[in-house]
Length: 106
Image (tube, rainbow, N blue to C red):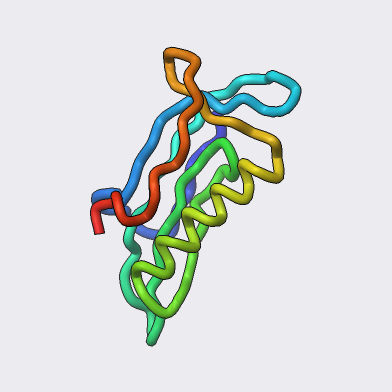
């Protein structure tokens, strides 16, 4: 398992999901995603995306506002899944979709 590295202690996640990822070849791997509010940096806001299935270290997403950085984080994950032909499934083998931004804890 890859080590997770991040630049700062992360607090409570804004969003988290656990599922199984199935790629176009049918290979399966655990999929966990957590998105954390990072705060404000200068005039911009940022959040951290932790998804070991995609990267072995946290990704910092920056935008002009908190909701924009969270939206960009969700879009990054959705685009990755789409372009890598990866689907998420639950323990009952049912497809799992990432929930819309307005259902998150923000």
